[in-house]
Length: 184
Image 1 (cartoon, one colour):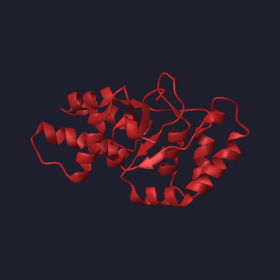
Image 2 (cartoon, rainbow, N blue to C red; image 1 turned 45 degrees about the vertical axis):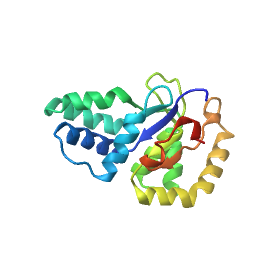
Image 3 (spheres, rainbow, N blue to C red; image 1 turned 90 degrees about the vertical axis):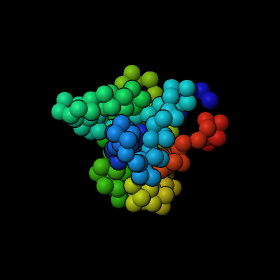
Image 4 (tube, one colour; image 1 turned 30 degrees about the vertical axis):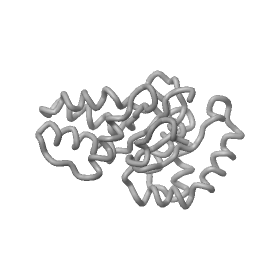
């Protein structure tokens, strides 16, 4: 493997991680989705999996850190989750995904998974998008072939490195938490 895999957390997965951290800090029981999201968070590291969050999630955390006693937990979350930044073709790809029937918010997350980068701009795209959104997952699965064809058609017109963009795998957090050798 040439570098760590990259995983974009949708807002619900990021929220479940934060809820799990908060509950653990106050010795409360976790629900299954929180356990799965926290497991993904705990197993991430720079050796095999880098976590990213969307800019709107980061903006919410920025506001919360100023007005809550949970600033240390937010800081802990941010130690493992970088903010993904949209690149040049993000908006165009997002519009094309909306044309495929995705909501504006879902299209933005999926477009960030394809045309997103790190704060250092050292990568292009994500290998995974972690989501708990069943309708988005189902719609992605039914439209994936058409979406791939649209991306290929778009790539023909793009300069490097954007020509090399790829579709992320859209998965639930528990389906991403696996050993690096078994990731396809």
